[in-house]
Amino acid sequence: MNSINPPTFQIHYFASASSYTGKQTERLAAPLPLSLLFETLESMYPGIGEKVLSSCGVSLGDEYVDVVDDAGVVIGEGDEVAVIPPVSSG
Amino acid sequence: MSSTTPLNTHPHEQPQSDPLPPHLDPQTYPRTTTNPTLNTHIHLTYDPLDPTAALSKISSPNAGANVLFLGTTRNSFEDRPVATLSYTAYPLLALKTLSKIAADAVEKHGLLGVVIGHRLGDVPIGESSIVIAVSAGHRGAAWRAGEEVLELCKEKAEIWKREVFVDGEEEWRANKDRDAEGNLV
Image 1: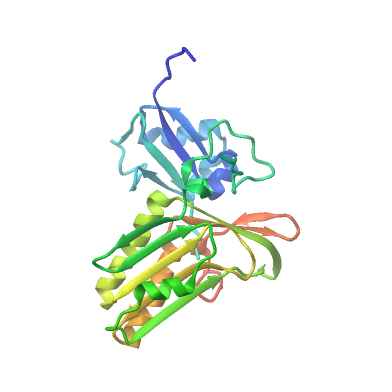
Image 2: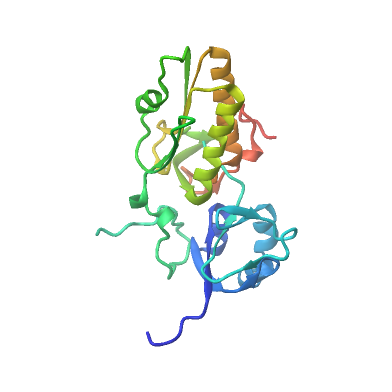
């Protein structure tokens, strides 16, 4: 590989988000404003917003973030993001 | 190194180019977090849970009550026969969440120790998927804390259960849909 790797962040999908995307994880182009995350995913996986993301949380590193309230946050190169559907331990 | 099969693979999922992330690789487990000061022990594992080991971690000469809870995998959901159950975790968040639940319970109920263990991957029907053990000076606090810790785990821990039915269908479960009696909320 002699091409220059473009900057990316890692996004993990769980449960219904993993089923819908058909992936457990992937890399997306960074930087990406957090406020654009859901529309980015919607463009890649049409329908995911209403069917999956509307009931999901989002984490950046080991903290939850709010795609609306934390509008100023930018997902940077090398960051780890996760889509967190309703949980079902026990 | 032997190759590892993703536990999460659906029959209809596309092959993915990304390698299996470490948090889905059983070889990166068990993962544990311990707070020696509070005597709390969090444990995520692909191996069978050991209730005796959980009890021994919280045993104390100051304790008058030790409560052990085992959640076991049930063979049906709404009368539909379940063939297999499988759990996936996001340990980066789950260990943090479970540690806080344990620490908060120690503070609130004056506990002498807390163990929260969760099994991941396929769990055969009838085996334990979660173990909670708490110890306290007296039984009232231990009973209350045991139930509270379990309910908070089910509400908050970043762990997901997938049920595969005998008819081949499969569903991701969501705890928020059910109360402690299994009834729809």
